[in-house]
Image 1 (cartoon, rainbow, N blue to C red):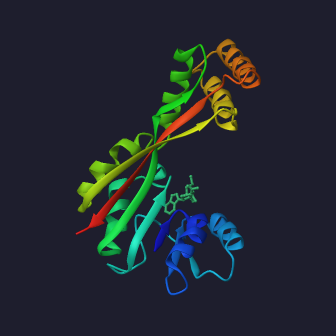
Image 2: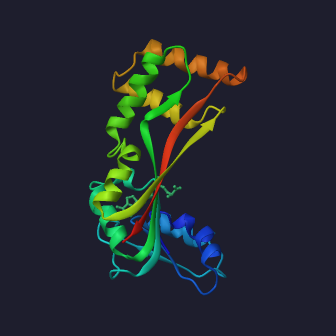
Length: 211
Ligand SMILES: C[S@@+](CC[C@H](N)C(=O)[O-])C[C@H]1O[C@@H](n2cnc3c(N)ncnc32)[C@H](O)[C@@H]1O
């Protein structure tokens, strides 16, 4: 199995493939690879490799399956990345990718107009902010078949650092006013105390089979 940009996922995959299987965790960050190596028990058969999803250093049909999560959202060329992932999987092997759609990100507040400006600004600034909805089309273009889509919602009632960081950044870029930022911050903290706060994002897990 190949885990692209997902070296921290190797432990779970190694348990699935068992002692006779092989798991390779590939990432383009040495720092992430070092963390993944440290976290993965030596008893598991995992290899870690520095590499780029757009140019995978493997021969065609090397793996039974390839998995990536929240990687294509950062890609300059997701179509090329998926074509590479499909190339290194053997015929009848699976490609499985999970990505969000940042246009569907919600932080609950009365001023939904300001929240929309904040989330859409963020979605537009991430390289592939709406990659989730495009995955089925990209899978088909990469020649993958029997494409299946599994949507999910990641929901929290606890105020995370995510909206708070976005609040600071959007205020700095004049996407929302200082007053709107202050009111949102106060409302979110109050809602969290009163247990009426919600934040959620939509993810798509797409599975395709190599012909
Ligand atoms: C948002 S993190 C997701 C990590 C993990 N998959 C997860 O869901 O928790 C994105 C990961 O993809 C890696 N990455 C980004 N671009 C990549 C590329 N072109 N090739 C390989 N890895 C990449 C990053 O270094 C990082 O480890």
